[in-house]
Length: 319
Length: 253
Image 1: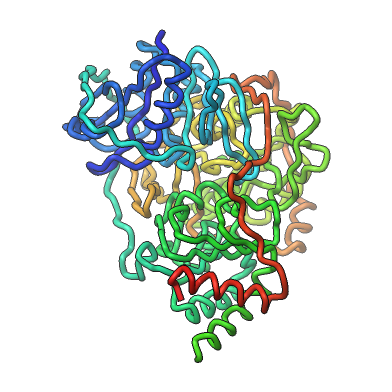
Image 2: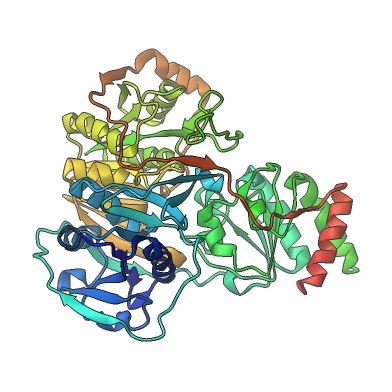
C-alpha cells in the first residue's frame, strides 16, 4: 500500500489530452495531503516519448501492441494488475470518453469504490464533485485505502512538467481474449465554419425550446456579424449540425464575446467555452450555473430579448 | 436480436433543487423525477435497431414516480417487454442498481444492452460500465450510432473535439449511449393510452439492495462563485443597449 496518487494518462493518436495535465495538477494538490508522490501511468505502444512533459514525480509505462489504441477492455486489464500490485491512495481518470469507460468496470471488478464527476480536492483531501448539471456540489472523504476517481476539467489549471520525469517500464500482463477493437477514426467535419476561430458567438441551449426559434438566434448572430453555436441538447435534437457543438464532445471556443442563450451551464458545456474573453448569459433560471462563469447576465426570456437585441444592433450599425 | 435497455430516473433540473436537513443529500420531498435523457436516447436507439433488423426490446426501470407512464410510452414507441424492479431504491447507488439490473437482465439473455452513457446525479460511476462488469460483458460508452453485423456491432464512439472512432465490439455487450442516431421520437398520448390497455408491466422484486457504494457524501451545497455575473436589469430595450455597449467595449462589434 502506498500514498501515491496515480494519474491514468489520456492520449489519442500521439497526443496527450489536456485533461491529463489537469489531472496531474489535481494529483499534485491531493498528494500534499496524502504525503505520497504523483505517478503518471502511461499505457501505449512505442508511446514512451509522451512521458516527456508530464508533471509527475515518476511515470509507470506499460507497452503492448494491444495498447496501441485506447480500448476499454485492454486498458482495464492492464490497469487492474497494476492497481492491485501497488495499492495507490487514489487513481485519477478523466471524466471523459476514455476514463469513464474504464473506471466503472475496474471498480466493479476490483471492489474499489469510484467517485465520479470530481472537480477538485479540499486541503484536507476530501473529494468535491459537481453533479446535477453543475447545480450541486457533493463533498466527502476519499474512500480508503484506494479510491478510483473520474475528474472533470474545470477544477485545476493544466500543469506541464519542466523536466522529463523518470520512466519505469512495467511489463504488460497477458492482454488476450479482447472483445473491443478500433476499426477507424473519423475526422471532425471541416466543411462548415470553424467556430473555434470566430470572435463573436451566439450560443443556444435547451432554452431555445424548438427548432423554429433557431432562426431568432441565427438572425441575431447575423446582425452581430457572428456565428451560431450550441450546447449538446440542441445538436442531439438535430436542430444544428455537430460542427456547431461547443463542449466536451464538441469544440473548445475562445471568442471575444460568447452570448449564451438558454444554456444552463453544465460542466460538459462550460469546459468548451470558459476560455472566452467575455461570457454573457441569458437564462430565466436565476440559479443556472452559467451565471457562475458569466461576466454579465440577465434572467430575461431569450425569446423576448433576441429579436429586440438584433434590431437594435442593426440600427446601431446604421443598417 | 434481443436488446435490453435499463433506465434510471433523475431529478428534473428545471425545478429548484434544495438540500435536506442532513446537509448531505437532496431534499426528496419536492423533487420531481424525470427519465435520464441519455436513457431516453438509449431506448430510441434500441427501437431504431429493432426497426432496422428485427428483434425484441426490453426496457427495465427501478420503481419511481412516473415510471409506469414512461414504460408505457416506450411500448408505444416499439418496446416489447416492460420490467419494473420493486424495492426500496430511495438511497440506492449505481453499484446496487447495476447488480439489481444485472440479475433481471440475465433472465432476458440479451445480445445487446443499451443504456445512457451517464446521468447527472451519478456519484459512484455511471451505470453502464458497472453493469457490464456484473454481466461479464465488454463496455463502450459515448456512443452515438450502432450498426449490427453478425455477432458484432460497430459503435460510433465520440471523443473530445469532435473526433469519432468506429469501434468493433463482440456481442453480447453493453453500450453507453450519448445520443441516438435520430432524436427520440414523439408519440401521441392517444397511442400511449391504447398501449396501456394491452401492454403489461412485469414487476420483479429486487433483493439485497445495498445502500453503501463506498462513496459517502458528508456535505452538499450549491456552487459558490467568486465572481458571479453582474445582472443587467430593465426592459428588453434597456438590456439590449447595455449589451451593445459591452460588445463594443470587447471589440466584438
